[in-house]
Length: 71
Image (cartoon, rainbow, N blue to C red; front, side, top):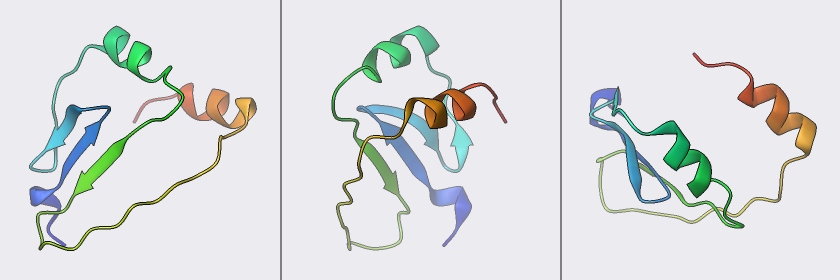
């Protein structure tokens, strides 16, 4: 895997391209994240294989703790 090829899309908005953050409107993203289902696409640009992964809802405390900081 080559990190400089990675593209990450959240709710149809590109957040990273070529392994680098793409600026986004935090208020708009906050609104998009209030949806019942959230789509995250991580494209490694390393072939044609794909898979879907479904998870369960995270607890309030888990989200609160992890939303309180940025790297």
